[in-house]
Image 1 (spheres, rainbow, N blue to C red):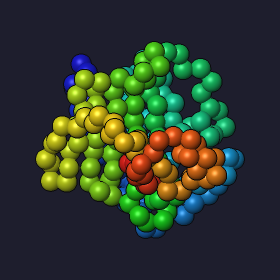
Image 2 (cartoon, one colour):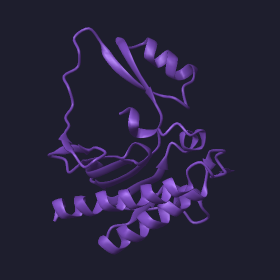
Image 3 (spheres, rainbow, N blue to C red):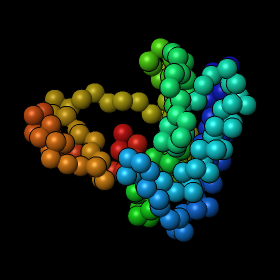
Image 4 (cartoon, one colour):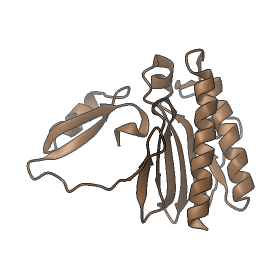
Length: 189
């Protein structure tokens, strides 16, 4: 079931990415109560993803970003739920730099057991079922991915392009960081 469900998630993320790209370059933002931006692309992608997850796994609750920012957020999800950020990097989406993603994860007992990250502007899909992880590149080539061993001379910090602040800088200074990757959304990871 896991492999076929992961394949379904990849397809759902691809469709959500297409919806987002249909809005790219012409979306306007509104502010949510927390003062973060939201667009029609966020909401349309979330509606597509939530409907697909409810169809695929009707017994698993969904926690999604715009749903949580709305009038009736989920207050209890249990130990198994879908976690969705339909358009991670809304600021990057609005800025036109292509560093935004579609994020869908199955969380079980506080661990992610299935995950898909789509980068529609780059035509990339990353996926993992907990035992294997891969990236499907533009053109359809699939490449296995894995973590690397930390370099002996220091760590690499993945830093947000839009949310870097004094607290982040102070935290970095407390660690043996020798290299930085700066990016928007989950792409930096």
